[in-house]
Length: 218
Image 1 (tube, rainbow, N blue to C red):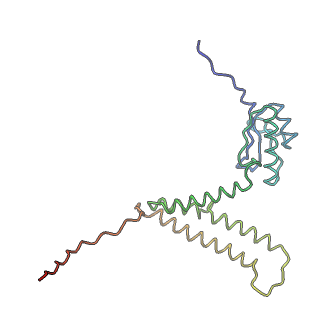
Image 2: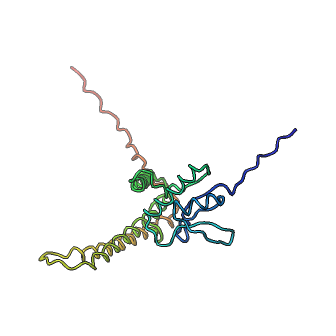
Image 3: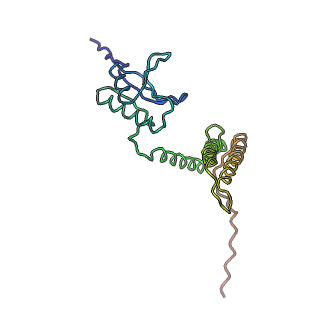
């Protein structure tokens, strides 16, 4: 007798993740019992969507609050016997410096890719990561600096005889924009350049000179 496939009640599985389009933390799937746990433990709200009911956290919660509530709900569901997938980015029990360590590893990988690049195309790919208009490192860094400059601009001015550090911060944001523009121009140049190897080759060896005859001994 051929054994049939086991029956899985897929809706009993709960997935807690962050919707990339809206930024909302949503919980999909689960039974009525799971819905009760989500609402009582995590503060999730029931919602209706085009493909069925789901749960979400309230709008406007800080990121840390999102992580705490999602983690609490997932562990309560697990303790009640439910199967749960929690987005690692929402797990509040991970190492506190996990995101910073990941960013440092990413920068180290870019440096390694740049040093090992063997073609202009590979160089252009690295420069895109650094200065790409949408998600390049420099434009994102500039955005952080601009937000910090705006926040400091609302603070009362402190009397100082020296240069204004807040104004200098605004100038730094402009400098980052100019640097990103120059790097992007270099990236475009590398992308348009004919494909050629950038690996360093040893210089050609010089022709060997004949040695002078040894002087005769008398």
